[in-house]
Image (cartoon, rainbow, N blue to C red; front, side, top):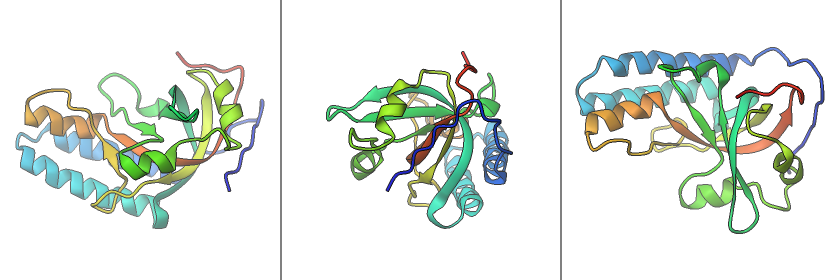
Length: 188
């Protein structure tokens, strides 16, 4: 059962240590990827990163109480919602820019959609882009033990494609809870 809590004008709780550790792993491997010129070695780094992220998240690849920003939402053909969430701390130019996306291929897409019957659907549909939210849920596991991620093909050069997986990963998530932190606080 999905849980929903709307918290208006409440101070944000202390940042979860898992979110800070997740960021640290992303930054560490992005720096290593910047110096790498071999696509094969970048794939090895991606597997190492996945293993570390799996350790940070623990059993079930769960996360709870992460502060994220609503980047956008899309309606699905069946009336559900897919959302994209960003981490404000890692969203600067030349920074890692992970997107937390409640979608993915095949079964992930069906499992991750916030359906019209979900208690999250109504309140989530009212949130605007740039809203600071607190999110809990789990990452879908990839084949390498870490979170499943997608990466758009931004170039025809294999090296650039592999590097993009470090700088701009799209992590597929299932959202169990999402709540607005400060309704009056918006981000561009």
